[in-house]
Amino acid sequence: MFLISELGLAGTGLATTAMLVIIVASILNFIWLVIYRLYFSPLAKFPGPRLVAATSWVEFYHNYWRRGQYIYEVEKMHDKYGPIVRASPTLLSIRDRDFYSEVYVIGNKRKTNRDNTFEGLDFDGSHILTIDHDLHRLRRKPMEPFFSRLGVTRLQSAIAAAALQLESRLRELKGTNTVLSLELAFSAFSSDVIRKICLGSSAQPGEGFLDAPDWGVDWYNTVVTLSLSIPLLTAFPWIVKSLTYVPDGILQRCFPDGTMLKSFKAKTREQIRKALNGVQEKDDKEISLFHRLDLDATSESERSEDRLAKEAQTLLAGGTISVAHTIAFAAYYVLSRPAIHQKLTDELRDPMSEWPEKVPTWADLEKLPYLQAVIKEALRLSYGVMRPLPRVSPDEPIQYKDWTIPAGVSVGIAPYFLHNDPEIYPNPKKFLPERWLGDVNPEMHKSLVSFARGSRNCLGINLAYAEISLLLAAIFRPNAPKLELFETDDSDVVRIHDYQIPFPRLESHGVRVMVS
Image (cartoon, rainbow, N blue to C red):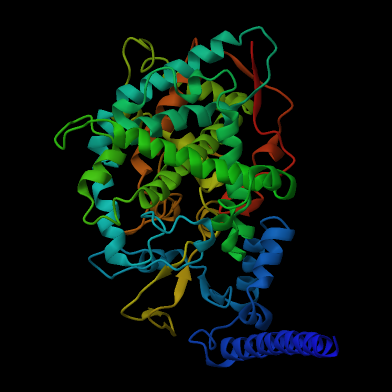
């Protein structure tokens, strides 16, 4: 008994010693990391707050606890330190519209890598979050024909069908006093379009979100939850990967949002299986995007279900929320500003006179100056993305004025800064479509970077413009369903929270309408 007690005490002592060693080692490692970042890092020479240079927890505090407010802290840094600042231990932020094209370059000018900022989202197999320049090009190339101008032109009938179905759903609500969220309705529209691209003929009639009585609210809430969780998930990358192993009952009690994230991953895998189980030939003009990725994969790892599921997650989520939010943003200002509403309706009178028997092409709608002015102003103030999208030059330094940015360093320019530049957009916070009419300052187009630029720009830019143009034309033409705002004001659309996807006040119910 005495021997057992001694062994027990010895074991306890060893465990305590081991724990102390781990704690001391962690403290020493943290101290060394801070010293390295402040004095030896390639970014040590750049201006900015010392605390921000030392730890990423400053950014986490403002984005998680203060709910997407770090972009405004970076703005204050620029006000104090100048056009280039160290915005985190690993990121340089530049506030200079003239340098945008030097950071976001095309592939034949300089290779561009991505950093690992969004590692915690577990989308690392997707083309969007692929770090290496060459691998990114390899993964993106098979998808480009689907989103080119020609590819989107071929898709016009599907976009028109979704717009007409949405209009029919709106007509069903006439006189019922039903309150509808436009973000939800428009997300059903954009989701069905991107599902058609991704699934091809596997997207069966009657299975879309526009067919659902609730407009696919669970899917929309899941994508919103994912967006709002970005600060937490990127700070703790292990969270998403661990969700698979947690029983749903425990997850629901301890981390309710995790249930939605787990469901999101399961739904996208289901979509991949559905597309790949369909029989399609390689030269089939109606081939789905997912099937094309499978056929064109250069290795087994590239065609694995896990990688394709991650591609599906980024395409389905990205194709849902950004477009829907932009259309709802534009719709609010049209509905709340009678003068804008009247001008837009008057311009649409002739082009939409034979709708839906005759559908104007995207090219036709591009020629309507006031419609396009409304769209550009909506893109400017809804941003798409507010914060800097980090880019890395892997092989050669970048020269910015007197500053040499070493190869391998993350650098970005925030669209929020460009879109609110008073020198380019006088009275920048005000929604003024007229600023895009007449003799327009070329710098306005240059500074509108909602879809980014360069070799890693948004793949869906053409699709987004086509969707936004046609749906706004359909719902604001003469004889369209009459929408009336319900308990909605500017605070329900003005973006003040940066969660990668920008949001208005988080207590908002969005842009709500009734059909009269």
